[in-house]
Image (cartoon, rainbow over all chains, first blue to last red; front, side, top):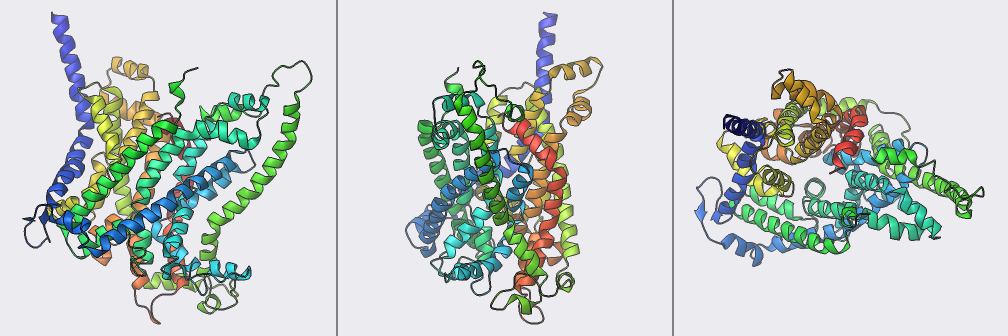
Length: 306
Length: 308
C-alpha cells in the first residue's frame, strides 16, 4: 500500500515536472496561435478598421471576397495559383536534379553544396535587389547575354506578360539549392546500395535505375517537398512587395500582398481576417488533397518489411 | 546512417564470383569516369548560375555609374570605385541597422535556444497525460499559415503598446517559438542514452541540472542547428519588422534596405550600383555565420532531422 501510493506520487511528480518543462510552449501556443486563430475567426465576421470597435456583419466579408465586389481578389487568387503551379514542379525537378548531381561522388562536393545553398540563406530583399538589376531591361546582365545570342529580351518585371515568370525565376534561384535539395540529398544517401547492385545485375540502364529504384525510394521526400513547397509558394510576398508592388496591371498582385494591403495599408482588419481564413482553408484543402493522392504513390519502406 | 553508407560506397564487394569480375562491374568503372566528368561540368555550371547574381552585384557595386549604364555592357569595372561603399554608408545608417538587427537576432536566438531546450527536454524525458497528443499539436502548428494569426497578434501587441518596439520580434521566441526547433532537439535528446540521466540522478542531480550539465553539452550539433536556423530567420525576416517597426531608428537591415530603394539622394533615387552594394552589406553577415557553424549544421540535420 505504502509502496503503491509512493509510486503514484512519483509518476505524478514526473507529470508535473514534464508539464512544467513544456509550459513555455503551452503558454505560447495559447497566446500566439490558438487565441489568435479564434480571434481572427471572430474578426472575420466583423467590420473593423481599428479606430472604431468591431461591428458584427455576419458573412459579409466572405461575400465581398468571393462574390466579386472586391475586384482584386480573384486576380490575386489566379496569380497565386499561376505562380504555384509553375514554381512548385520546377523547383522540385530542379532540386532533385541538383541533389542527384551532388550525390555523384565528385571532388569538392562540399564546396558545390555550399555554392548551391548560399542563395537560400540570402536575405530575400537583398536577393530581390540583385535580381532587379539582373532583369533590368536595358542594361541588365540577363538581357545583355540574351542579346549576345541574338534574342531581344523582354521587359521582365515591367511587362505584364513576363512579370510572373520573372518572379518565378527569382524564386527558383533562391530555393532550388536550399533545404529542398538537402532533403533530397539525404534521401538519396539513405537508399541501400544493394538495390542498385541488384538492378545492375538485371542489366538496368542508368535512367531505368533512376525511374525504378531512385524515384520510388525517394517518393516520401518528393511528397514532403511537394507539400512544403506548395504552402510556401502560395505565400509568395516579399519579391512582389519590393520589386513590383503588385504591378504592372495587377499581374503580380499575389494573395498575401492583397491581404497585407487590406490589413496594414487600408486597415480593413475585419476583411483581411476573412481573407486569412479563406487562405487557411485553401491551404488545408490542398494539403489534405495531396495527402490523399499521396497515399497512392508514396512508398514507405516500413510498409513492406524485408 | 547516411554518412556510414556513403563511406561504404567505394568498396563494393565483387560478389565473390570466382576470380573473374562480372562484366557489368568492368563496364561500370568506365561508365563512372564518364558520369563523373559530366557531373563535374554540370556542377560547375550550376554553381556559376547560383553565384552569378552575386558576382554581378559585386562588380556592379564597384563600378562608376558611367560604366554601368552603357551599351555595349562592361563586365568588369574600368576603375574600381571603392567610394561607392562609403557613399552607401553616408546615405544609410547601416551601422545602426546592423546593431538593431543584432540585438533582435541575438535576443531571439537566446530565447529560442533556452525555451526550445526546456520544452524538448519535457517531451523527451517525462511522461505526462496526453503527451503524444500535445506533441502532435506542436507539429501541427508548423502547418498553420502564420498569416492567420498575424492580424490578431498585431492587435494584441498594439493593445500592449508594444508596436514600434523590438518586443514583438523577440518575445515570442521565449515561448518555445519554432516548432521545428523543438522537434529537432527532442529527436536529438531521444538518441542520448537514458542511463546517463539515471546515473546523474543517483548522484543526486536534479532534472534541470541534468539538462544543463549533461544533455546540453552533448547536444552541440543540434543546438548549433537551431542557432543557425534562428539567426538566418531573424536576420532575414522582412515581414515582421515591416509590420511592427515604424521609426527609422529602429529599422532592421532588411527594412533599411527596402527604405533605401525609395530614399531620395542627390541626383534622384539611388542607382543600381548603390543598391547592389547595400545588398551585399546585408548578406555578408548571414553567410559568415552560416559558414562558421556549417559543420555542425549538416551534422545536426543528419543526426536528428532525417531519422524522423
